[in-house]
Amino acid sequence: RLIERMIGKKISRRPVPSMSEALEGLQQLTVDKIMAVVQEGGFRPYKELAESLLEENDSVTLLSAALKLLTKEPDQTPVKLTIEAPPPKRKSAPKGYRGSTSSAAGSSWKRNNYKDTRSEKRTRNYKHDKREKY
Image 1 (tube, rainbow, N blue to C red):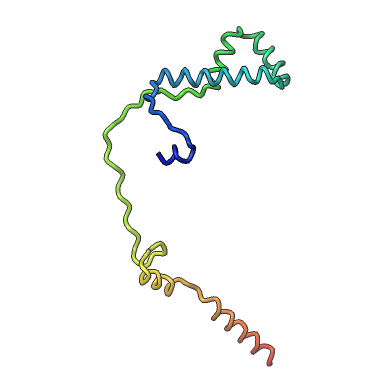
Image 2 (tube, one colour):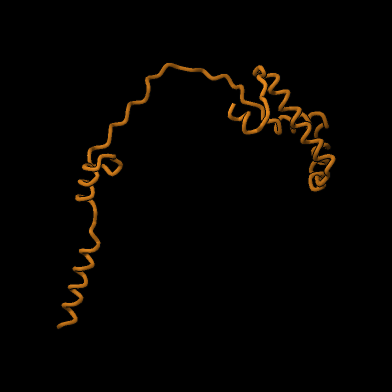
């Protein structure tokens, strides 16, 4: 209903198409696209390739193969389902791990792993200052 209000039109319910009806629709869409390209033109670079293909194959076979490729038919390879154990559960991360949501755990991780660059800079500057004095 939200979509109907947004587009300002009533959407009527329709039955879900069968696999054969969906395939027919895809095929018709592909034919329409091919006919639009024929009417527009601009396929001259492919003519030489098409002529060489027609020397080796008949036109109906080539057009059928092209339609099959362009239609993008769904794969209907049968799938055999087997009963397998589910994959093992991953162990939870230890407390203090970076991805933890607990603030106490996060702060202990920071204390143990955070590198305070400011103190290093102070140490370096102090050493540098010492050298200059001598």
